[in-house]
Image (cartoon, rainbow, N blue to C red; front, side, top):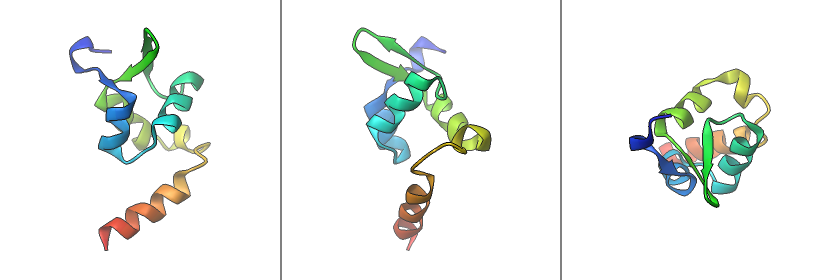
Length: 76
């Protein structure tokens, strides 16, 4: 992971329309490439994009249908 591109999970959640708690859970489970710095988790925008693009990782995503509905509502 490139240290210069690290962002907090809160910032990643804002950028990608996910919740901070969901990203933290994915990081703890090892399904999202992230690391803990002190008490905070950090990741890169590329790692979140890779997670969202990987169908195998998202197949266990409990909010994927909810997120898909929100995405459709935001597009209208």
